[in-house]
Image (cartoon, rainbow, N blue to C red):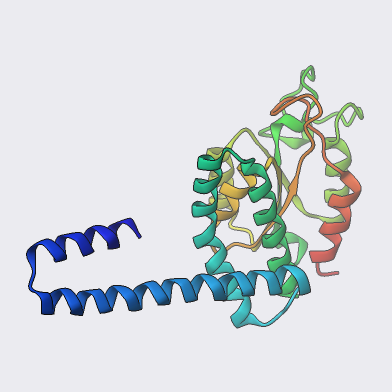
Length: 231
């Protein structure tokens, strides 16, 4: 919008009245189309989020609109000093609704569970980011329970230290669906970055602050995992 206004000022300053009127008409039409796009996007997002609609055209339009609205919404949140995590949580919930609305189920071998290393008990002496078999499943953190659930369903689990490690693993394994546990910021950026790979996001709990002895609702993880697995 800023660049459109800038173009309008330059044209007004340096071009004839006929050129000015023509370009002004184009700008008006473009503005109407942009506003129409956002209006339809908002209605599509509401339809998917509220009614879990399975219409593919509406889902595609809602997804495109959400990706376009998210950066602008985060920008406004910065300006008005509001909590960006609320917007991110809505985006994650909407993304999950989009994946569920597709109605598709996935074979366990095509699903990847990504867990953040901050789920691990901070005083644990075993390194599990490269090898989950090192986990002793002592019960001090939720990772042991998640590994048991994944083993029973034959789903691969990777524990990552950050976004770069997660991207490398996704590129190497190339799953058809990712089940990710992380904070709102990491989940949002991850969903955007993986592009066409569907992601089910589950926000972790942070009773001790960010990135330290975090937890997750294991029963909710189990339930959501069973909802997308093909039996």
